[in-house]
Image (tube, rainbow, N blue to C red; front, side, top):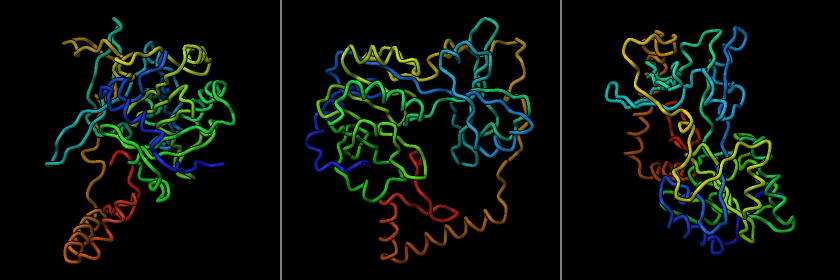
Length: 345
């Protein structure tokens, strides 16, 4: 059985109402009130080590490293390349990574990496930690959490699942499913057994688990907010205790009035770089290429073609309508042609 579109959103309006009454940026804004207890399940961070053998793979962006718990990150002396700052160059807003390094007194100091990403300056022997994935459960984490929730859910009772509407890889049929919404968010609704918690909504493209899940009897509710590095569960005290004790999970008690948790919580206190202190060399001190992506002839040709396409759209109302329909279906025109829109767009 696969995810089946819900017949109606009426039975899920309780959740929409509860989240609408919650506070944005807090637990109450992503998981509903009314449960006996709540838990934060942390998504793993990732430790990467660069060698002569895997350098090309790392530079291509196809290796994530080994999962590490936040508690391990808090005790680690390895640099944490995590988060970004915005800057403007040639009137274009871009982002740069930041690097957290531990001082001898245990505090973390933050550096701004001079390049837009880490890949251009990797060298064999480098080791660093990157942040957790946002908005989806990793497969191992999903399976462990699902096994705990399944024990508290009748097998014959179907569950509700919600997926954020903004994922560009959703199909037309999925986009046609009924939906509920809360301030800043809208989710399409589906029905399936509880064992679908670990399944992806996308076939053969990316592992994307549900952003919302709850059983018919509303005995628990799970929420993986798209911009969060954690998953929240509300339920009975017995269920929450089982999640806290599950050996495969890094879980912490949560409060509805608490702010959304993030890996930065374990990197505090963060201090300004002290003057005159000798720090071990990090990525921030390496020379970056002046421009990793210079405008070669292919790129320039693509820009010209993109502007020509926009001119044709302006001159042809019928083509413009077809273009708008592609946007609604999750496709958009980039410099290099058609591709799917992801949540970062």
